[in-house]
Length: 201
Image (cartoon, rainbow, N blue to C red; front, top):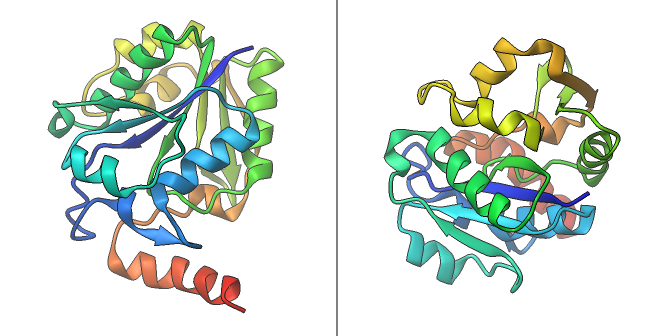
C-alpha cells in the first residue's frame, strides 16, 4: 500500500514570530525532522506543503533530497487549503492513503507513526493516534475518505470529517509527542528546550 505523508507547513507562524518549519530541535529544522521521521517509518512519498515565505523555507529547511514540495499560494484561507494541496500531490504520486502531519508537532515518536501506518495497511479508513484522552497527529486517511475531506468546510476541515464519521475512525495508542503542538515561544521553551538539553549530554 502506497501511503504518502503530507507535512502541513504553509502557515505564517504569527504567534511564534516566523515560520515554525524553520525552528530547530536536535540539529534539524522542524520540517526536516518531520520529513525524516515520516520517511523512516515507511511513508512514501513525503510531501511538504509550503505557503508563507515558501522560497525561504525551502532553501533553509535542509529537507531530504527526495521530499516533494507542493506550494499553496492560498494558505491564508486556512489549513484545509494545504490539506487539499497535499491530497492532490499525493494522488498524483499514486498514493492510496495519506498521513496528515502539522509541522509544529516535531516530537511525535516513531512508534506512533508505525502504528498509524500499520492500521491503514490493515484496512482502516481513518486512523487517529491518541494520548491522555486527546487526539493527536498524524492522522491517517485512506483514499476512500478523500472526497469527504475535499467537501469539508474550510473553517473546520478534517475535524468536520471526524465529527461526521466517527464510525470510520480507528484510534491507536499515541505518545506524548503526538499531542505536543509548538504554537508559541512559551511552548518552545517548555517542550523543545528539555529535548535539546538531553541531546547535548
